[in-house]
Image (tube, rainbow, N blue to C red):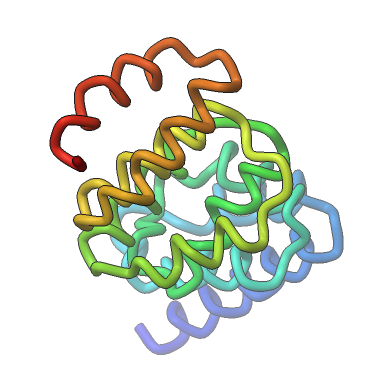
Length: 169
């Protein structure tokens, strides 16, 4: 068992290094060959390490390829998942998972950092961030982000502004 565990760690370290150095395909192949239902919990750390250390483009590519087999919500750097997808201009279920986990952990500070570090935020992601702030209880920030999304032409955000506005005033 100890030998199996060592081999797993060795393979996962190799996969992580491949992904971080830009060979995402090779890293993903190693993970797909190595990780299975009996060792997935023991192997989950590798996705957190990739999220922390890889360039954003590699994070997005890796999560899109194999992210579903891991539990990214336990990773410490959920903000980076959101930021990487935002930079790529892509929406993803991983953004939803990360936002839900941040809301559940009441990490408004992390949401604030995402906004502070982000440049141009696509309207659909503004809507998701607005929803996250609303769930945490920051109605002012929720309205502000909905207004921005509405101004970018997202009709759903305009409807949501009209629904929450009476609660704010």
